[in-house]
Length: 206
Length: 206
Length: 206
Image 1 (cartoon, rainbow over the protein chains, first blue to last red):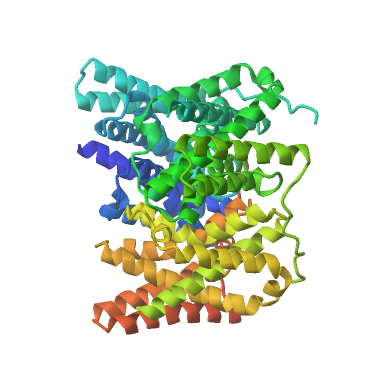
Image 2 (cartoon, rainbow over the protein chains, first blue to last red):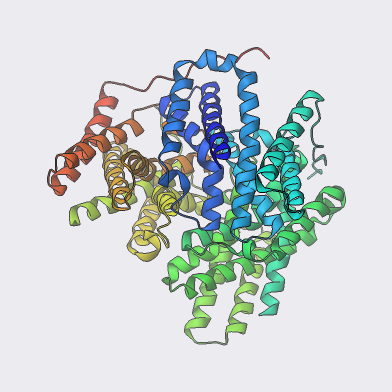
């Protein structure tokens, strides 16, 4: 479906920009920034496909991803300040990417005949692992472990997808609605400043 | 063999609890804690199977692992303080898991026709890589690189396994004895406070 | 080609030494040092082969790598101070390894029928990912993201390789020249203290 591929490309571009930008705060050099930009964009899908044994993986077979990521990296390097000022726009696209990646990963899991919980895990993996690798390479605890409804939005979208599929709603509608749910949940969570509870035990005396 | 599978499940459960608990000290949110719980439990076997090319990997094909890990994650979230107080019990199960994972990885390596040193590496990988990923995601130098006889116990158990196998001892006995060796070595090392020497050179002046 | 395999082994040895040495500065124990030594030596090729789906990977099929790495780890442990004093020699061999790994990864990518940009990525991956994992396990931002012409030398060598190949120069000459380019670029960069520009935006007020 063309719409999905378009969103997939937009998500890839935005994830590449987010990775490249993150390197700026750590004062990495251009190679470091480019490396993290690439890994952020392809990390989630790569880990998913490696686990599924679906290799060589998509970005190796479809050169489009390479040029899209390269574009994101170069734009970010040249227009660093301008890109940073577009944060709100980027945030919106990032959220679209989140929804699309979740849905693509989930569909891929189902098409491999996985049970539903594992297919949902594949969806979440696609959406969040790139960002986790980005933060780990930047020597930080992954952002999405700490604040914000992020993965939770993915899970909500995935459950809606499975529900619609169960009732045999048309695939295109199922796709669009589930992506919309991811986006809506995240935007609402940001607007109303909702986040997940934290683990809170104190360390015991040793 | 049923006994092995039972221990495998126990090891998986305890590793999931250990990962989830570790997230509490970093004040991660519930998703972060669950993510680290999962990765700690399945990380070692996943890396082993990916290296061996044995995909899609076990926890994707056998949904039991998913529910066992989910159970461990949820128990830990609800009963955080109680779980922490069970540290000694958990430690014992963790050690059992260590022994069983070592033996399972070693057997898998041998069944793939690997040479013995590489099969031992697969055993160690199964047992320790989950914890290494857990600590890396928590932005810490992996605990098992720093103190305690941990991997050393795995190596001892693996060598005993290979020795018994060489003398064609019954497989069940070989399995049980080698797991027992891992457990015994680790418990003795803890009791007598034995640890590996450290690398000790000082940094040179630059 | 024997020369290539010899250099591959030298590169593996030196990468193992560099990983083991790095653990000393963190005061890891012997297992931690050995683990990081192994991962530094095999990490790049492993990630490349997993992405390509070429499993079980080379060091599992060819036991030579295991013994070479073990040798590097043990030498470093026993002669820590002496090894550190050989830094200049090690640096030279490390640079040779960098060139050879780049070329091997690039050739492997091409032999898998990958497009040229992706094959270059496979070359860079082979050369740099081991060091990136080493630094991540040591809880540091990867060195090569921060200073030095390192990956850039790999890219230069890869482009020369592709150019010579395009003009159908003899494979052996193409191999040797491209490795020599990697080495030369890195040595010149060190000598004249050239490094890549850094990403430099300041964090905005929040």
